[in-house]
Image (cartoon, rainbow, N blue to C red):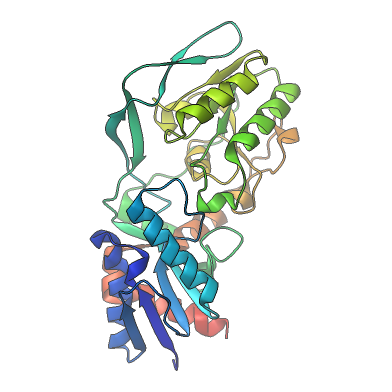
Amino acid sequence: MSMMIGIFLGSVRARHKQFALKAIHATAARQGVNANLFSGDHYQPCDVAVIWGFPKPEEDSGKQVRREIEIRNRIVQEHRGIIIYIDAPLLGRKVVRTATSSRLAKVVRTATVRSMELFRERPLFSTSNDHSHFRIGINGGFNDDGGFGLYDVCQDRWARLQADLDLTEPKPYRASGDHILLIGQVPNDASLRGTDIIAWLIEQAKLISSMTERKLVIRPHPLMREESLRFLQAELACIPSIEIDTGFASIRQALNNAWATVTLSSGASIDSLFEGVPVIATSSASPAYEVADHDVACIEYPTLYDRGLWLNKLASCQWSREEFKNGAVWDALARTMKARG
């Protein structure tokens, strides 16, 4: 393959994440490809750029993270060829309890809405950085922009990934449920594509409440700021039978006895479908978009999509550390890029 590959280590500083970038460099170079590691902060001309993470707004992050995002954004803006994106996995994610925070709120039931009273400590939950697998996309990382691109050459990945991660088949769809689960996301997440997640939650909550008599449980992201939580509470306080769950429970617990899940583009839609809870995903960036309805008008009669093909597509974008090391990842990338011309 006559091309120059640029692998940009500056797009991420964590060693366990750089592992994936360095492995692509090593395996491509072993096959005689002109592959170069770039550790600086600036874009370097190349035919194919390999980076960690996706472009997104730089605000509301720590200094180190802002710097990494700035570098990624610059590469994406200046590069004119193929971009290979590496990121955290979608399947088999490990959710861990982290240090407590003083910013969140204790949930207290009232007659109409669960209000939130501030107290000193709350648990936070995040995905573990101990990745056994990494997510890969060509020219994108989501459902509608290349996130499932490797499916073209790897159409039987689910069985392999299922064995690697000891994953069970999705549960049968439920025939009952007492509440609708409305999922929030980290503000400014790349998959939001500029959507104000607070405004979206408020809009969807009002629509859903007008279309069903089922209880509505809103699950903001645990990292949502205190002032945003207060604003969300104030905006929805006048609507009866709304519960605001501020993230103390795991997503599996939140899905317990749910009738349907409504999300913009959250990876929680995957958890929902594995638990047998149908999904309404309003953004085409959602990893569950092709097996979900897209309008809350379907809330009482959500479509129960077959999930077989979707599982293989989802699994096609996720590869193990060993597959990075032995060249299987580079082989799949090279075949996909060749097939696309």
